[in-house]
Image 1 (cartoon, rainbow, N blue to C red):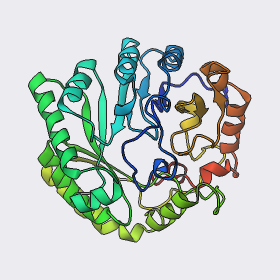
Image 2: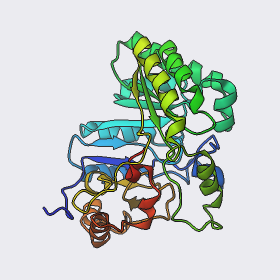
Image 3: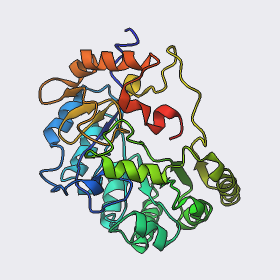
Image 4: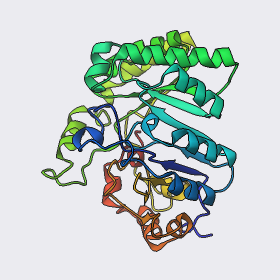
Length: 332
C-alpha cells in the first residue's frame, strides 16, 4: 500500500467515556459542561465492532478525556479486546481505583495502567487535579501494588504519569522518590499536549489556550535542565525507569519525514464514534476524519479525508491543528 494508504493500524485509542469525576486544570473537561457517565460514554456495540475490525493482537488504549473507571462497560470492553489477543490498558486518576476494582483489573488481564500524579505534595497535586485527594491516590496505588503481589501477577505494568508545568516541575525529583516508595518503578513525564494556537483566541478554547500559554514548558528549556538532571539522579538511586520529554522542539520535519507518524500507525476514536488522527487534539470537533455510525473503520482509515490529512503532513504546511501539538513539535 502507498504511504497515504497504510495497512490497518496495530494501535487504536478509544475514548470509552467523556465523563470525569475531576476538573483538572490542564484538561478540556474543566472548560466544558459535565457529562453523565451513561449518556457520555461509548456504546459497547460500537466498541466491539471497532475492535473486531482491527488485526488480532493490536494494542487498544481505553482512554480519552474522561476517567475510564466511570465507563459503564469498561470490564466488558477489556474482556472483548483481550479475547482478540489485544494488549489493553488505560490512564486513570486512580481516585476510583478501589481494591475490588484493582482485583478485577488484574483478573481481567489488563496489560498496563498509567496513574496520573502531577505533584509530590498534596498541595500541588490537589491544586491541579481539582476534586482529588492525594491521600486517596496514594492509598489506591499502594493497594494495587499489594493486589498484584498477593495474586503473583506481573500485570498490569504500572507507571506514574506526570504532566510537567511551570507550577509543578520543581517537584519532579521528589515524585521519583515517592514512586519508588509506593512500589512503582516507572515514571513517565510529558509536556502539555497542545498549545491550541490554531483556535480563535476569543473562542470556545480560550480558557485552555490561555492556561497552556501560562504553564507550558516547551519554550522554556532552561527551566528544565537542572530539574531533569536531579530527577535522573534520583531515578538511578531508587531504581525508577524515568522517561523524560525533549527540552527543546525537534528540528523541523522535511516532506520525506513528516513530523508525526500517528496517522500512519494509530487512530483516536471519540465517545461519539468520531475518528480523529490522534489523541493530542483534545476536542471532538477538531480534525474529524470519519464517523463510525456512517462507515466502517477500514473505510474511514482508507478514505479521502485521511489521505488528505496524511498528504498535508508530507508538506511544509501541515494541518493547522498540528502546528501547536507537542507531539508534532517533538517535545511531548
